[in-house]
Length: 346
Ligand code: NAD
Image 1 (tube, rainbow, N blue to C red):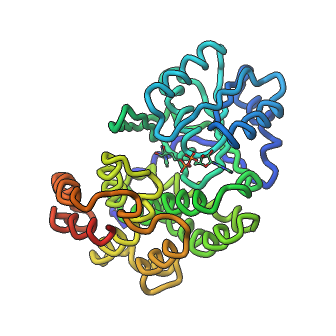
Image 2 (image 1 turned 90 degrees about the vertical axis):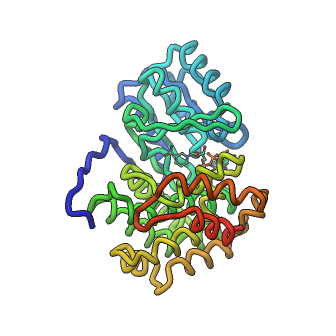
């Protein structure tokens, strides 16, 4: 644990309950929102968005079900135009990180408050991190303006989340927790959140993936994803940095995090810090990296970088990029180390 730290979480109201979506109108009123633009992804997300519009009654001005992963520039511009055209005074994002990501980009440009209703485990609703993309180029930043003022967690909404999205978005959240145990900006609170989240994911994720209708496990994983998102406010770690480099080659976000996690965990555990016993205790194992690998192997998501379409020939280039980052915490990562990590994950 660091001997000095600053803990400065943004204010955020969190409402958690099965059936909590019924409280969306009351919670929107609490934020003084009279003309809400509801943001969702197309398809099943649009149906959920329409349900939220109906629950909001006169407080909903329009449904904008056009969110796309990584918020491409044209999608961001379309969302901003829709918010301005509707004269919206607030945003209700319902769905996963894609819907919440579009709301964040509108918020950073307009200052509109966000109420988030997350339906995956990726945790964006609890972070000040925003991101947008233009072709292969991703831009990210941090601003408390994009932190949703209120989160409504309703585990009932996650019962239909497909097994592969369940597994990949939760492993993305676990990566925030595991790496958060080594973050130089960690605080006693973020470490406690990360440890508790890992225990919940460890006990319940495999059950939630095997049986999506297991409401107890769905609820536990949703609580864990909130805690994991909160941990991300204390910065990112090795897994995120490698995933970011691979994102430059077009690899998918959550799945890349999932594939890398056992390898980066094994690498960092070799530093032998106080994170080791915490992680071992949370996952109820002597070998946390092995436990994460077994978890990954039990899911129907890609297990190796080659399964994600990554070319082995690109490993030296990717490793050089990681070497240039001069990562030192919890242990130095040389270009050779990065090559070995990518090769193992490949
Ligand atoms: P997602 O929002 O892209 O959703 C994946 C798919 O699942 C979509 O097709 C969606 O319609 C569907 N879906 C979502 N919830 C569902 C449900 N309950 N039932 C049925 N289908 C459902 O997935 P994600 O992994 O949550 O988000 C990925 C995006 O979030 C990426 O752009 C990533 O960069 C971003 N992200 C941002 C942060 C942050 O802090 N800013 C953190 C994590 C992820």
